[in-house]
Image (cartoon, rainbow, N blue to C red; front, side):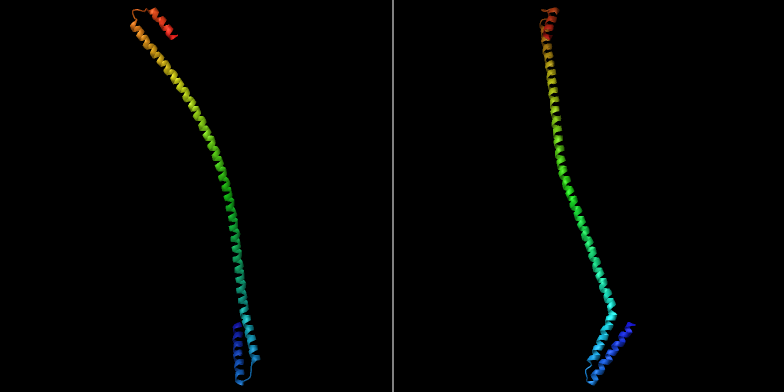
Length: 171
C-alpha cells in the first residue's frame, strides 16, 4: 500500500513540476508542497526500519559492552585468585624451607649421635681385642718359656718343682 502512495505522489510531483516551467512563472509553492509530501512519505516508509535498525544496533552494542564487562570482571576475579595462589605458594615455600632446615638439623644431629655411638663401640671392641691379644701373647710367651724350661731341665727339676714354678707364673 505504501508503495502505491509513494508512486502516486512522485508522479504528481513530476506533473506539478512540469506545468510551472511551461507558463514561465515560479512554482515555489507547488515544489515546497511536493517536497514536504515526498519527505513525509520517505519518513513514513523509512522511519520504522531506521528506528528498528538503530535500536537493534544500540541493543547489540549494549550487549557486547555487557559481555566485555563480564569478561573484565571474570579476568579480574581470575587475576585475584592467581595472586592469592601465588601468595599461598610463597608461604608454602618459606614453610618448606624452614621445615627442611629443621629436618636437616635433626638428621645431622642424629647422624652425629650415631657416629659417636659407633666410635664408642669401636673403641670398646678395640680395647677388648687388645686385651684378648695381650692374653694370647702372655699365653704364648708362658707356653714358650714352659717348653724351654721343660726341655732344658727335664732331668734337673722334678715334677713338684715344676708345679711350683707353674703356680708362681700363673699367679
